[in-house]
Length: 136
Image (cartoon, rainbow, N blue to C red; front, side, top):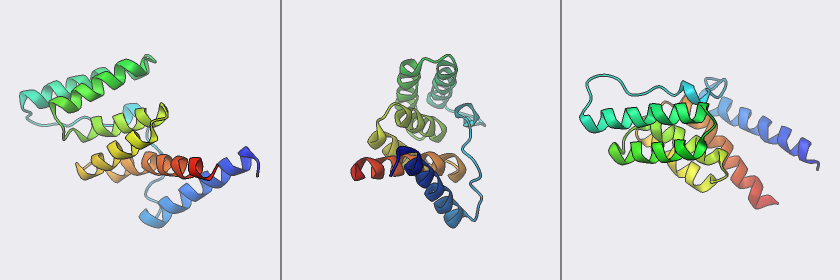
């Protein structure tokens, strides 16, 4: 089987799984900058976490993935329940090839209350990439 055919099959399986689980509600993966920060009255640690989250988004937009990883890890050190920061950390880890770390962060983000539409598409991608790695 060619690599191209394998990629098409993976994309098809991902779409079918998402449609089966959520009745087609997961239409497309949002852009990294689309992950919303927490709002409302916040404790100082939550404010610091949201600032670091915003800094990480800016770093990613500037192409500085290492700085984004540092900012996201610091954001979670300040507020371990910052689900948007955890989602973004999972997505960045997935992009850097750390599929185990990405899966762990995305699963925790879901436990912390992140919206399924933000967590599940990248989580499915990571899970499929890990399964494909084991098959090769």
